[in-house]
Image (cartoon, rainbow over all chains, first blue to last red; front, side, top):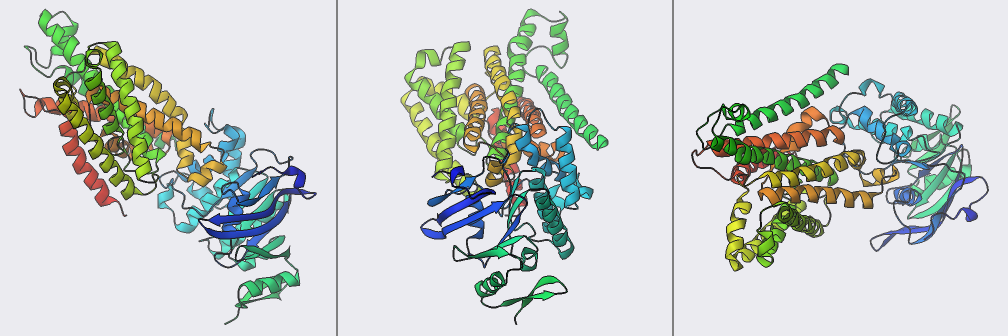
Length: 259
Length: 335
């Protein structure tokens, strides 16, 4: 299975999934998914539980080999190509917040981490901590933080990589509303700087802040489009069994529960 | 921050100081006409030739050897806990010590003349055999446990491998009376037979293992974030795992080949030092190495004092104390 199929890449795309199919054991969890993402764009992937969103992200990151299809990367993407924030429970609970974020700079230092932090590394770490509002806890142990604070540190670690492509699986999980907004602003800023962001989101209002939204159901990509696209909204309402309705409220897309 | 670093340095200095004091104490302990002034007397021509020989040919290599064996086991334990992301991993519990013991018994049974010889090359040969056994033991445990993420399965697999390989070792010893005699001391863990040639092998192993482990410390840091994250950070997991298992097996093998099966030092040393060193593996590996040296030198001193003038095999002492410590660690763990 070729992972670098740059020749098959759509024009302007940084990476592209082409007819991806994947399995967990014998169970197919991803079927024939094709998706492209360009620089300067935030793509949100939404869908109900078990739709294959995380599997798609793991395939894009090269962490799960697909059973068919492949992922093509543009030759213009510089190394390190991607930042990753996964759903797996990260260990390192005894590490300090700063040490955890500093590990995001490992790709810039070589995997042995020698000779150590440069000025650019230190700046990136401080920026990532400030972006996630965790700079106040830099010297604290991860063990002393709440679930939401730990999630912000993990996000800071992913941001510190400063890769052209960010693959984020539920980056705002456990976060309170103000910090969800903060993360959305940071992701919008990163996209405006030319980064390509693909994030799995369960928070539909936040997903409708992204530039584009992809909707998945039962391992298939059922719709994708710009956040203002009415047919996209109908697809989202449909995959969630009409339990939500998307409406424009004071100039912003709101997701209203249908009780 | 600066105060915090100073505190950590001072802890490292304290551990080193305790290790040195224990070494000095160990030089003054044991049979002979001299008492606590033995090291000084041996240094200043104030002692008889026999006493000087006791200090320099018996006590000094034994003390240095114990410190080096403890250092290697502490290092191996810290590596195992970091590599398998499991705070209860250690060479003894992972079956690598039992594997090393089995291969040594095999060597002693089939290659008696050279394996039982004294000297540098015999030591190196036994260490090589123990290295192969240690690699085999830990690999078997990992296969049986289907990886290292499940603590209970890992511990049970380690126990099974330890018991089975231990039984095979006993079987070898039953076949060969000579091997039985030599292996008895090894099975209990013994520092009494450590000489300068053993010290040379141990020092060489530490000189190889410690720098190699420190070079791989950042990889262990990255691994603590999970395999997926480590992989996306550019860590070549396959190669580094092999390198880390090899370093751990070499440290274990060198220790086991010289001093036999010494349990729980590898488990306790990283745990004891972690509150001071922090979780970053650079400091943790160094700290666990120092703490391992302190623990085994202390155990060696105690093993000479507790039943004086008789001596307790040091492995018996570490097994009893370490077993209680393991229970405490298990009791304190939430899951």
